[in-house]
Amino acid sequence: MMIMFLSNLIIMFIANIMILLSIIISKKSFMDREKCSPFECGFDPKFMARIPFSMHFFLITMIFLIFDVEIALLFPMIPLFKKVNFLIWMMINFFFLLILLLGLYHEWNQAMLNWTY
Image (cartoon, rainbow, N blue to C red; front, side, top):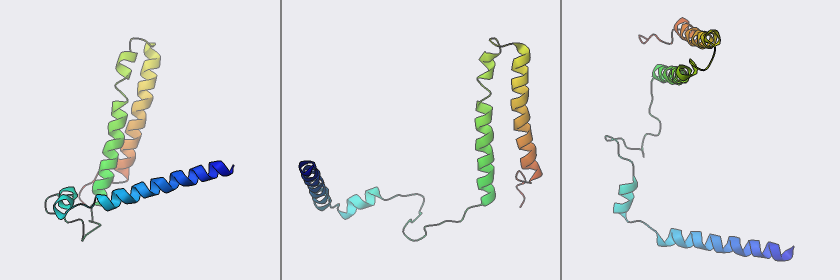
C-alpha cells in the first residue's frame, strides 16, 4: 500500500514539474500573443465582456432550430412509405405534423413570431 502511494506521489510530482517547465519555457513573445487573440471587425474582447443582444432574435433562432430539426425528422418518412401500411404511415405523419402545427400555433399565440416589438 505504501509503495503504491509513493509511486503515485512520484508520478504526480514529475507531472507537475513537467507542467511548470513547459509554462516557463514556452513564454510567447508579444507578436505570437497577438496571433492568438481573436479579431472580429474591431471587436475588442478586453474591455466589453457582455454585448447586449436582442432577446427576440434569440427566441426566433430557437424556434427556427426546433422546427428545422423536426422537419429533418420528416425525411426518413419517405422511404418508410413503401415498407409500412399506408394507414399507419398516414397516422404517424398526421400526428407528427399535428405536433408541428400545434407548436407553430402556440408560438403565434404567444406573439413570438411578431418582429415589430
